[in-house]
Each structure stands twice: as C-alpha cells, then as structure tokens.
Image (tube, rainbow, N blue to C red; front, top):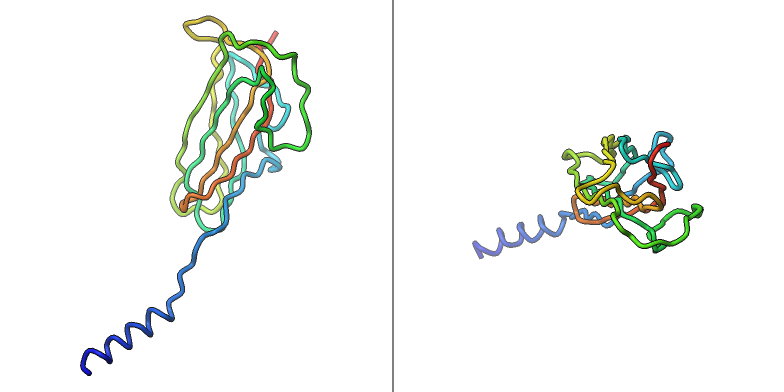
Length: 159
C-alpha cells in the first residue's frame, strides 16, 4: 500500500502533463521587401552581393544553407510561379558552384539573414561559365522540419 499512493500520484502528474510537439515546417519568405536574389535576378562574376530573406518558424529556427549551381541543361528546382527566360542548353565546361551552411542563433523564431556572397571570376581552370543558374535556399528548424526555395538567376560577367 505504501508504494501504491506514490505510484498513483506519479501516474496522475504524468497524465496531466502535455507535451508540445512541433509538427510545422519553417518558412522561407522571398516576398519580403528586401529579399535578394529573387527569381530571374542577375548576379555578376567578379562581384559580391548580399543575400537577404526572411525566415520564420512556429517554435525555433535551426540552420540554413545556400547553394548556387548551373542550370545549363534546364533541370528544375524552381518553387516560383513565374518562369525566367532561359538561354539555349549548353554543356558545362567550368561551371561555378557554391555551397555553404549557416547556423541560426538559438531561440529565434524569426531571422533576417544578410550574408555577403562573393562570386569569383574563375578558378584554376579559367573563367566560370556564364548563364542560367539555380539559387537554392534550404531552411531547417530545431526539430528537423525543413523548407526549400529555388529560384532561377543569371550569372554573367559585367560588360
């Protein structure tokens, strides 16, 4: 009997405790007024630009990554409604590739990243190929839910 009363109280306490489960994915807002780049923007080799977006989550954001890769074969990652004008398909000779991951400070449910991204003119193989590229943003919250946005951009040399 002496064990029955504490067991009863423990069962009562645990049955009244609710566990909040985060079952919502975060959101990448590129309709944010300062967002850059957005679909169909042009970026320039030999220059830098500042990536801006708005990230939100119902509980807590975790991390994000940015990837820029060629779209010379016209494959699709686009999450945008409007289509950009694409150049003719071509083989990739020396395409530019950028992949970087970033942590979001703890306890953030909204975050406005401003990351400077450098677009070099080339590498040891020569000048990078101009043309159609994808700009992919992947966002995860602390629970592991994720969102992805893909926009088409042109990356060219300024005249």
